[in-house]
Image 1 (cartoon, protein in one colour):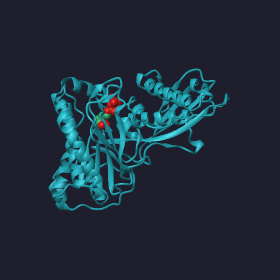
Image 2 (cartoon, rainbow, N blue to C red):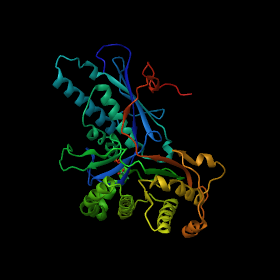
Image 3 (cartoon, rainbow, N blue to C red):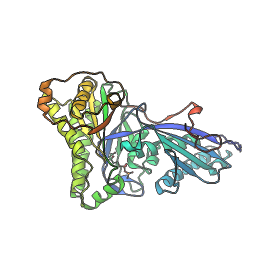
Image 4 (tube, rainbow, N blue to C red):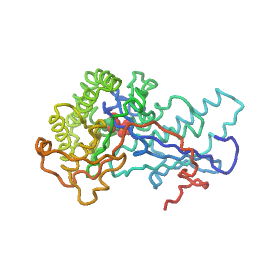
Length: 402
Ligand code: DP6
């Protein structure tokens, strides 16, 4: 951050990715520090398809911290936002006093304006808090010149956000300490490690999710015996198996662990009292479709996973993408806007055999799926070098979008 006392705001813009867990985080042992009851592991999705962009500006003339999310001003006093702001400012002060005590620290007391947008509709029901907090923390750190380990700061915004601080395949080690200093995200392999791996987000037409993940997981911690069993006796060995499946690019092992872990997470939701239902009828049809498809070929070619909502995220390999997309089109036909059905990375068109249709044997469900986002693993947060992409104008207010 420039040390001058200019009236022109200093500004940084960054982008950060969404991640989708294949070993789920569900349950906190410390609600304030956001420390989980088990480790988790995710794939960072490519920012060309799904990303959050955040601009942070600071200026001596700003009178208060302010934040705008997707065009609307929000309350900056939310405790999780405050934790992230406080932590980054603390680290910036520490860094300056460690490095060079003569350095000007006055800029650190300036107020900030934050503006953040997603390139995907919030209505798509995709976990936007992970990309959002990762982007906020990364951008604040760049503006204030903070370097080094930042996943433990992003974690305090939203647990899953710590995994969006890295690209590729990322584990969040639960840690043991009470202060959370060892509860960190770590890259297992970079995004280039498994180029054949592809991701399809099947956006299910649905209302807003009934129970948010924060309150849902808290009720699970309080009432589900299955959650305790899962955290103590299932996840530790599953993490090891998942890491070796990824390292060896063993799709069968990766896919089966992914599906089993999604199923156990949703079983935990059902074991919560009162129970939590995130899957709907379309989700269950997708589960059935995937198992029938794999059975038809006598091998595991496709895997599903579901977070705190009905959308399915499909992991598959390049060779099977076009056929599986065609299967989805066939069993969830749309009206006429066929072109709009598939967004993101192009998928070549193909036909499916009657034999395959018969083994799946499901009655097509028109409009069950609104659209598909086709993507792959991608890199972690980045600085946006082009200043024309700043979301705030030189007056420190959101630019008007046309
Ligand atoms: C089902 O990270 O949204 O997506 O820490 O309370 O903000 P908070 O919860 P959040 O929970 C994500 C839950 C999940 C599984 C996962 O991403 O691992």
